[in-house]
Length: 349
Image (cartoon, helix red, strand yellow):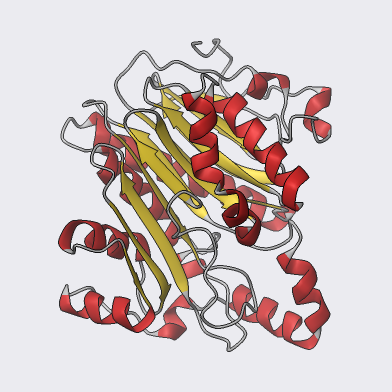
């Protein structure tokens, strides 16, 4: 269904936007109806993480996802860019933005260091590349793409990923350049109150993942996901983001997904692949995501969200958390939101 015309900047909300729906997602009427069919060839949808985004990060989070999706769409609209190029560009933009828990905005481990994970998947070939526990790399998503395109493997981790990055000439970044004052302050706070870390792992309060999905003019889809993890995680902890079928999945036969939320819960239900399973059964991106989030909530008590794109250009955005910054470009318009059920629409400049 094509998106209805709206005044630029108008926000659509309903009573459903104020509470958790029975279908498992915080969602408003406009979002529930969002079975958008894109009449043009290119669609990009990005997210900056589903969590309880505080007010002091809200504006920066929305601005960041808008910049990222526009940058990605510019690659596609130029005629030469692929879906892989688009999702890499979008996620790199978010990794370079300290408002997000990825790349330069990553949170710190129990040891006070940055360890990052990333995934990229090509829906045409089902090739994938991922990296985990990466240190000293500004853009892990680009390293994940290199794993996909320049090795016979699907995942490299820790020291092996570091050696591969060096062999590929990937510029190393000193750890201190990836550590923000905000990340350091949060780490110090949770170090003093270790019981709070356990609560953080099972709540919506943790910083989260960034990700993107795209459809290009050739009909190919791709996904990419990147994260710095959860504050005060054990060194070596790997969440869902670099795990295929959990943090993301892309298949031209169905569509593409990038997920966000509590990593351990997402892994237990293989959230990304579960969403595409429901789409294979005939559900729209919105319906499929609602069913999968509901299952994750009911089965393992997990919260999260996803951006989802069908092979036909139909796309959806859902979360079961307080907020999720997201943006999309489709059919000549820029869509974005933060609060559940909130959709702003602007003409694409």
